[in-house]
Amino acid sequence: MPGVPHSGSIGLRVWNAITAANVAAYRLSGGRVGGKWKRRNPILLLEHVGRRSGERRTTPIVYTRHGDDLLLVASRGGSDRNPSWLHNLRVNPDTSVQVGRELMDVTARIASAEERETLWPLLAEANPDYAAYQERTDREIPIVVLSPRG
Image (cartoon, rainbow, N blue to C red):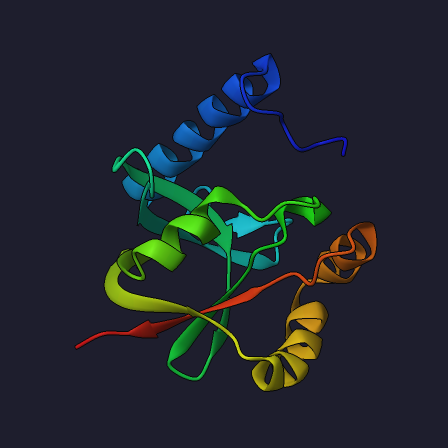
C-alpha cells in the first residue's frame, strides 16, 4: 500500500526520523507542537516495549477520549497488517502515555465486538479518515482501549 513504509526501506528510515522529531517536539512543548493531526485530532505519545527486541519505543498516535479511557485505532493507514505497537501492547499491556504535559499509567486491551459496534461510529465521526482506512483493507481494524491504572 502506498504511504506505508516497508521494513528496511529508505522510506522507513525517513518515517522513523520524522517520528523521532515529532516525539521530541511534543515532549519539549507539552504537546503544543506535534500534538494535533490535521489540526483537529489530538495526539498522544504511547510508550510500548518491543515484543521481540525488548526495546522501549514511543509512538505518536491519534486518540479519542471516551469517559476515563483513551481510544486508539490500529489502522496503520488502512494497511493489511496491524501496526507493531498493537502487537507490543498485546504482549505488554501495562504501559504509559503522555497526553499534553500529563503522564498516565494505563492498561491496554482490544475492544470487544460489542464495544466496537458502539465505538467505531464515534471514532469515525471524530476522524473521518478511519472509514477510508477500513475500506482499504479486508481486516477489521482493532480499537485499543487504554484504561488508567491506579
